[in-house]
Image (cartoon, rainbow, N blue to C red; front, top):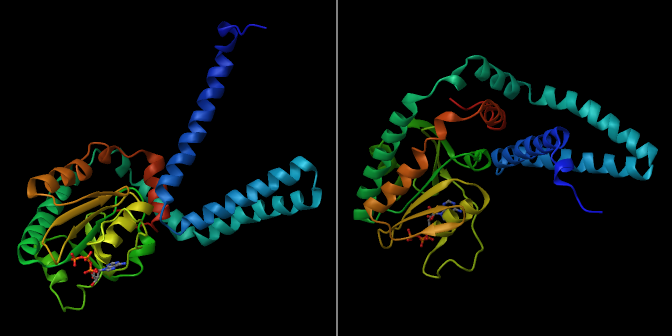
Length: 279
Ligand SMILES: Nc1ncnc2c1ncn2[C@@H]1O[C@H](COP(=O)(O)OP(=O)(O)OP(=O)(O)O)[C@@H](O)[C@H]1O
């Protein structure tokens, strides 16, 4: 029987399509935001429980289905209790209404951050001081922040240079920048086992690629051996960058116009999954 397009294009089908799109968007954003955080384990657990529930219900395993119902019901209550501080901070953040303010100060801060990074990169590159700096974008970096030494300091070129001066306590490992602050220094990043990384590059570069494979963070490496500057993002290595090249990338990634227009959902989940650290 031929398909009549007129019959397919009904209001109900359009609403169903919209329904699917909204759910898909919701899940996609959630996955993007929790990638690289401990919330991934929680999310996996929830998905497994829902799958067991649906399968057991579908094939008629009534006891298993009943148990899964109880797990889901009590699990929601348990999650609210366990994540109470994060949820409260998320709601407070929503309540302050800062989500609706077009954040003009943000670009000022981002510009200061870029200026600080530029100063440090220039200084360290000329003197062959090795450095590894990761900037959090959408994916939370809590799991890696936990491995470092807390600083929670304003980003200045001077401080970044000081951190990476050889044989000082903080120079080994990565600086992680979160919410326009130096969250930690001496953090451990996951090493990539990609065989596409040239053999002449050591573990500092491998760590920069590693973090770019599991999160959307932007990572800057200054090579101790050559003074060369590399940026990694989304598994991509951009090597031997000139000042003009890296500034272009930093401005493109950190000053992008979408940043101030985060939606309510994104802001809320971000605050919850990052333990309420969003400014
Ligand atoms: N997993 C990691 N996480 C964070 N920092 C790391 C990690 N692995 C190595 N580093 C840093 O890299 C340094 C070692 O760099 P190595 O000489 O092996 O790297 P490289 O890629 O050859 O860079 P360079 O050109 O600067 O020598 C360590 O002292 C440490 O500071």
